[in-house]
Image 1 (cartoon, rainbow, N blue to C red):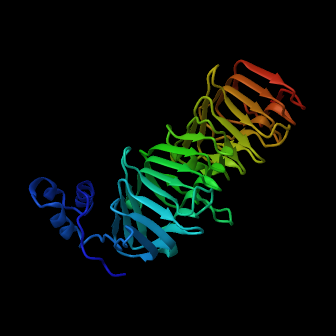
Image 2 (image 1 turned 90 degrees about the horizontal axis):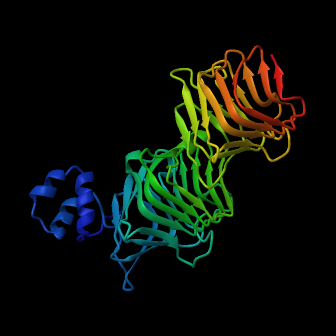
Image 3 (image 1 turned 90 degrees about the vertical axis):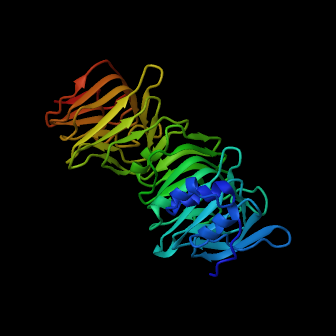
Length: 404
């Protein structure tokens, strides 16, 4: 790909790029005007194709040099764009329209690439459909493995009307085995999920301001550990399926599930524990966790702790689909330490019980409503001896407190 002739970049963009490419000293010492700064930066970045007579810049194919897209023109992606061995910078106020069945892809084919959007609250970066406000009008933005973690930042950005891939594995934003920093990211109008975090992907520490609204689905996070990366101030609202879906998996580091206006839904076992320093899963008051089949295991063979501390007003709910035995319940293994179920509602479990406690497991259950189990409410296995406080039992088919 050939570089275009250098053009003047907006002053704010120049400052950010000077910092990124190690020219911080020039920010305070140079008196170069914007065009001169751009001549310096052209060795590092390209401004990409030039506008046509209508003021539109069209993009199609590979981007293999660093580029900056600015608000000086409307940007239209006419066919799939793959960014690799380069970083695409998008300046504040820039509008990018994407043709039907078309995708912006970062790091496809194992070759590293990056995407940095530099919007502001007043001038966000917008990725939208070129053919009207129709859900699924374009595929969305996909960030693939080998992406440059340091060059994945989405700041004050809207991604709308994507999620159109018929295979189903997509969303307005899909991230695969990479870490993305977001600050003020809005995902809307997707025909699939608004956000998809696949194969261990997560949002970077310090992320904030995630808004996922008016999509077919809220979020699909394949591995349960990635759910803890969703910022505490995230908003999930007005999605047709307003749930946070996951296939479950291992939680091997300290993780917090924050409280949102969307339940967590698991289609697979969640296992909490680590053979080294241990792992603690903390669930905030007011959260709902729904299990479609399997259950949750804490400290089974490796050190694990579950802290589910609700309140009178905001209990924590663990449930199936409303049918007794529709999930396996919560099992605390011998390596479960200092676990707490306080102000919780546990229902619909089976297999061992709604709550199963093995020998040597350390567990306090207090202010709990445990009901509708196809087996026992609480089962003590091989001498399991939880500390029991105020518990209300109801409709547990094999009894309330079983075992010894």
